[in-house]
Length: 435
Image (tube, helix red, strand yellow):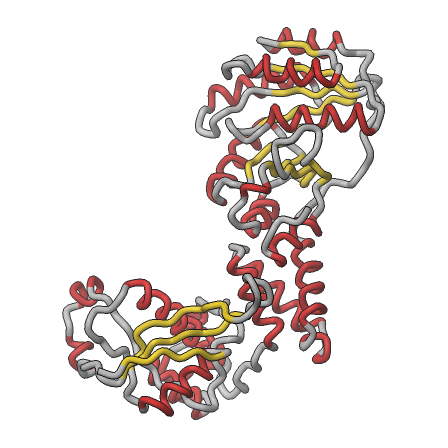
């Protein structure tokens, strides 16, 4: 058995090398993307790596179709497809995942398609079963084939129409970057489509121009609060009152301390603190320590009635920051208690603190449950612990609150900044936290 590994700029180029070297009957065993070149990881470029063989015994396609469906579902599969030279590789939009089901009938759409696309569709419709191989290799190959199917399906869904044009390389790289950062596929598709339509050919060939356009378009999906300096007393004559709510362990108390230090030390405001976090061990002591260091008055409230009295005791302050106990989104009773505390505090703003290190499903679930207490702002904490920043875009788009602040570490009073949609978008596109 002849086993060889090929590297190329695209799948189409690699398949061309394999066909030329091993013949049209070669079978793909493994495919992945690797980085090559550069110095110490800088300046490396991404290429496609495919391992193929010309000596694997492949069962006939007819035998594969006659296999019992239940056995076929359990057996690892790999597919060898001969790609026609004039059919574009899967670098066009990979978003048409449901185009197959939307087409009228396979026979009608295939008959109306151009000849190269008919041959590609026929090849894709005939899977070839081979001996079990590595599961990861099969999964990677399946993703590539799904992209090819989606591309062909889009062309077939418009009988008689021309096949979709290839995406420019710069735009393709940005599209893959968005998906790698876990931006929702629908958002990524909309952004790439919009950028492709708005930019001219010259700009689409410029990596910097494409990156700027994608960043700008991505930022539009993140509703952000208006940037402003530290607030002063509210129009109703009370201190401007800000309450923080959120799940346990997201860093509310530390964020309260950062805000308090920022407002007093940098903006010269008179700040007061109120804590209702009497459930967590040493939570009051933690905030009292911060208050003593910064030089701020601190009130403790155990009940809604005490919360009203505590806020009244700080009536001479410009700003009052209210720290609440962390609540599980699944604990309806505790959320009801929290709402009673907030009703007594009568905050002018309620900020929902969410950890950037949490999964997207957890963030969405927390936002939905805490919506009962009426937050109108969101704070993304722990950006320094985030795995992917694309989930923040997905969450920000789905919740009814504007981004107010982000935190990037535990240091007080540093590592906090105003929430910026462009800042989050740059984190997604550039793939890392910048100072």
